[in-house]
Image (cartoon, rainbow, N blue to C red; front, top):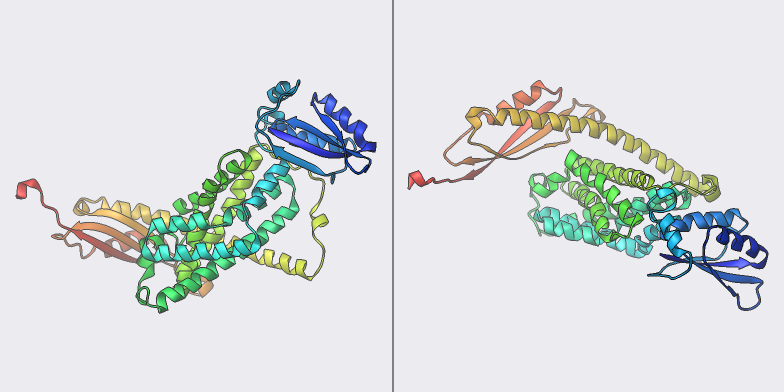
Length: 435
């Protein structure tokens, strides 16, 4: 339920009141103090009717910039309110959602003040970097809770679906700033962790499970971003807690940004590149899926303004447009590479499964199989890939040719020059018959 308060000049009062009466909307009117030739009109509305009513009033002569306040109320008792609630149970034309103004406000409220935003972006990335090195999912989750990226990631989708170009531009600026700060923060933390001997400088970070999980795009990691964007849009459009959706958004951003920083510090360019690719693709998926979800909920633009109205042609604008084009081209290249990588990863999983299901390997237990970016056409070398397979085995069994068998099988289905590494997790097992 919403209470609308509008300042109505005397020359527009008749049209405003007539519009409210035609919609069976109950209202009260109070003279404005100081004799400013205006009145304040109060009227309650169901949440779904707010946008439609404001649009009607503006179409009937009320200025678009009129002083307007929309507040949430628990309940109201008026003669025609029950009838209005019946008509707008799910919003105008059976669409679910808040008014455009509320949606915009809720998205902006998720993004803290700029200085706080930068501080929390850096802190969350530092905590995530520590969690990756500790191989601790709990610490990484803590970094997600700290992260401030929900608002900046969802504001672009809100602006696109309601036609608010200023929100789109502000969102892109915030996302670029936040991601840059997060990567720099993770890199700085990695320098301290490595050269401050908080971890061994020779630590093979690519072999850490949490790091490898965010070292390259994979179907499961991309799924996080896909559903995080939809969850964020659902939380914005309804009364669901947005903080929970914010953690989901951060799950797609913060660990990948931290992995980029660690890859830079440990001089692992392929790891940094793979994590950076994952980061950009996740950000794109969050924005696109949030837009699609809001559009599916029934939000449409009623704004007649154009992009020209909010952009002035100056040096900063030109630099911004050039930067956006460079990012778009980079993202297009990453999307193509990611698609090829996903196909390669799928082929590897299929081939590893074929080999390990053979009878002679029946005693092995597959723990993990993952692929890493290799050198490609940008480096002037033949495309290559690295595959790591982790299996559990009894200490009594040896499989000296397993890596060769896997390498030969994978090479049959891919043109890449594949390097295969097999890691064994040994265990002892005693059955009751051996006692």
